[in-house]
Length: 353
Image (cartoon, rainbow, N blue to C red; front, side, top):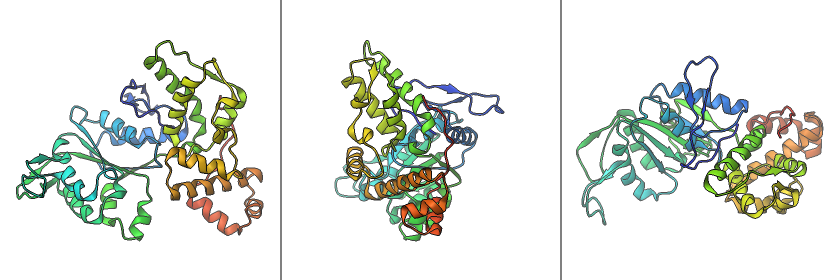
């Protein structure tokens, strides 16, 4: 499954999400043909008809906000506001004020009253991105606001009621966060009424061709006289083999970079970055370069590297787990547990370009 550009300039692409549905679902620029993507779109289509809370999970750069916007666009709240707040980008001591607003004099620097995002989102949708970064103290207040659809501004006593739809997203494993005591279990179940999980790009590579075409077509609208380029066979295979730790965002940035640096109509292998052309599980320097180039965190980088090693061993042994375990020098039961925990599935080989 692939999610396309997060740019607001992208023109919406209308596509039928389900053959059984007699109405069209506005994809809002979401591009791809993989089964994983179609499943996500079908769930988004269904949930857009109701006001249930939605929790979107997936790695950074997979397009969680774009899915949230598609749900809002196709809902009965589409004429209302879509308010986005990144809970991980705002210091904890300021986030409460951002969410619920504050009254004049509520704290040092509060020289005037301020309307919070919950109020602004009234009659519409509020999207709480990176919800897993919220402090446990604020989670209590958020839970009440979601349950009762009412709250008080910081420093205020008047109760404010709102009619909103709540969509949240995270790249963290919230069940693990619950076990560690950093995320409230009751809030998790309140947010996770309708779960939507977006697969990383390395697990939905059949969409790469659609994405590269989509991003290049966008460039023709933004850049005067830009001509869509084609990839040589070797460069195509390198693109397919690469694991894309930065996911869709990384691919989009690469396409824009190539549009500037490659003047010919064909993109050759040597014109791709070294960390893509030299990509292999044994090349740790390449992996490290990719991590720093795309701002990936330590835990996510370790997880992705483990996935790459396990998938490589499985492919080398034609998915005979006992042989793959020997190759990895680990117990077969340990390997099976990791495959299950990481949800690693065997891919059916097919031409991508």
